[in-house]
Length: 298
Ligand code: ARG
Image (cartoon, rainbow, N blue to C red; front, side):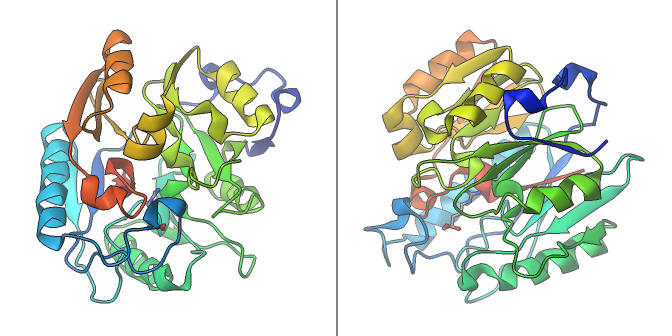
């Protein structure tokens, strides 16, 4: 069933529990940061970091993220980096994968806001089509959609959370809900430091989520509070400075996140989760952390 939820009044009894189940991701797609750089300010975190990437350090951090993902039970696939595509390491953005109602593997190609990232989608198309996914693209020309940076599946359910406001346009979700035949809860982002949904919203389990509340418009925040029985709240400096909400939920209640977010780590442990810390400082310079550095595979 495809439907769009924008406010509490649209819910009409919908809760994650009465939505069909969907198996979580079994793997991740990564791209090594061989040509990674900060060359233009695409988001506020990039300001002040132009040309300041330590590429050897970035490679070592990427390897530690890769090892944490593999060690947490994901099968890891790696795509070849391409010279001149400085953001290709952020595989979350150029596409979005999941399963259709009959279990078929689908990949929707993104439509990137910044011209410097548009070539990445063709490379994702080639990779996902070789991996056996049905490839779908948005029909409306120029409609922006930044893939798994803004579209996030509810753990274990055919329910999609759709961020918009800075990179993705809300109309994209009309097409995406039809492609996957699923309900989409739209979340409007209101603070440009949290320009992608994955910078301020981290589903942990079917019942719990870690968020940074000031990043959302009121109606969107109300939906999160209604649909997750347990909402953990990130502190401002951990959310903005360490992107602590950009963690990857892994099998066995593990959560891979940037090192040093002590408040978030304590809250996660208190909620019965197992945080695994990684250093992603070189990628924070570009506005990304662990979640941005992978695309989920099904
Ligand atoms: N520099 C990249 C950009 O602004 C960072 C993308 C981070 N990805 C994410 N899913 N938040 O596009």
